[in-house]
Image: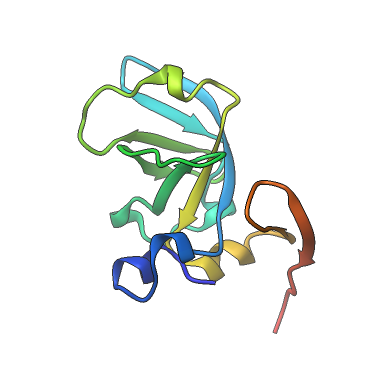
Length: 134
């Protein structure tokens, strides 16, 4: 399915990454220039911390440019600015959706009970159940 790690080592193009974890902006912290998201390590794994746990994209297309996940707790995460520049909070209102391109797709998929398949847009076309156990 490819993932952000594979993209960085040249195995795939960014647009070929087949796994995205959907998360929602649940808080603005303007004094510290941070967003809070409702996805933690239980939603996308703790792997790739030194690389921002993957990458972030806006729901409906378009990159997020300067956003990076700085920390993941069990069920929430903190998003900051890579460059340290102020985040345009109007672009990411509370309730807006973001995609995480996970560092490792297998670890991220394993965290979920189902996979929603989308093809060429945001409409779910299929649902796959994740197999647990060995």
